Length: 396
Length: 186
Picture (cartoon, rainbow over the protein chains, first blue to last red):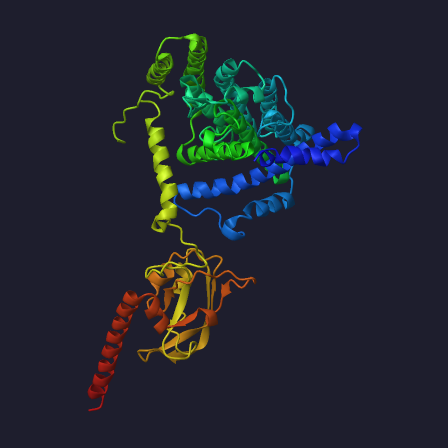
């Protein structure tokens, strides 16, 4: 069991053992990089086909089912198509920036995977402030998006990029604020430490994951919403709204650069989903003591896939927001709720010292009550940017 | 409360997701080359020329009157009259088309030619799998001529009415012919 759990780590050590001792750290790093890129590259390919098939099923149609068995070779066909397409750069575009933007989007996203713990002892580098590194790297995608929009010399690109900047900066705030309670509870900025802090079982069977606390549940929901917006997915995909902006900052991209943008977007989603699993769903921990026979990376993969499915589900369900609704939602609803959640989390941690009977239940009820009341209150006060309903005389 | 509509929507899509595996009747897609919907009687794609009898060229109803050529909004029909006249189904002497071309690329399937034809000669077809590897989209007389049986097959109601009217005309003409000599001979 332990051998299976640590199979990737032991294989890495064995492979790196062939290298001379002085080159061993470098070789093992390169092996990890190759492994991560292969794994998440495959994940990207699978996610595109599974997303299209799931969306199809949710809209009562078959999705792609022509290429290969059940259409599973569709990503290969798409990849070949993207590779052999002509790469058109607009005449008046800023050539250098136009070329660099997809790279600037994709490279930091790969870097973000370096700190995620995919299983026991399975994070590429164990930074003491891993989550700080993650968010710092993640904010580079805003730069790339604006580079793409600005360098294209196209009004739709620029509008899309400006929307993207407004959206990503707005949603970065609730994203970080929603993850702060998990840091407070763990008392550390290191992601493996956060996972370790969620180990064990309360009452013998409820896992001590952050999501099973009132602030964790609220933080998880806030984090997922903000993550959807951060990775420009439906219903927050205004920057590339096809119906109003053609494709936003992607308008002037074609061929493999376009594919790189998609790769970057999906990888960004994967990274932020991995972070959600780590912060709130107990990372690689098993949900019950008798389920610990499954390898830790298997648990991570299961939770990860479930969350990806949730994102696809939301995409199939929700229509796109308007820009003012989007920003109202971030600043008037998510940010206040995240701040209240922060206070609740601090109170929860401080009240951990209560010794009287039924202390846990009282803490739970107090925290959940405050959060539910503020959710309802904020939800009522926030009108979502709806204008006054216009009365028509003839066109009712 | 905020979010109730979102939850309801999620339930709906979730039900679709499970239901489409459990109950294939939910899937509205017709997977075209393998599955085909039954053809509809009032479907119309391109015009064709009806002929009676066995020989496509001899039995053409078309009399090269060029009304359809003049009325066609897209100008996709080209007719050249023959120089000799031949008797039609009523026994009248009529011209026949030497050339009758329809440019399928230009035709917009409006059916105006069918509306204006006084001889019930041009009708709408329902073929639609016309893709081919050559640019042979100008349809000539030979390709356009299709039998009355085919017409009856694809548009049964309409063809029955046309046939009845033509039979009636033919009967009247024959009666007239039979009556005419009686007046002339004495």
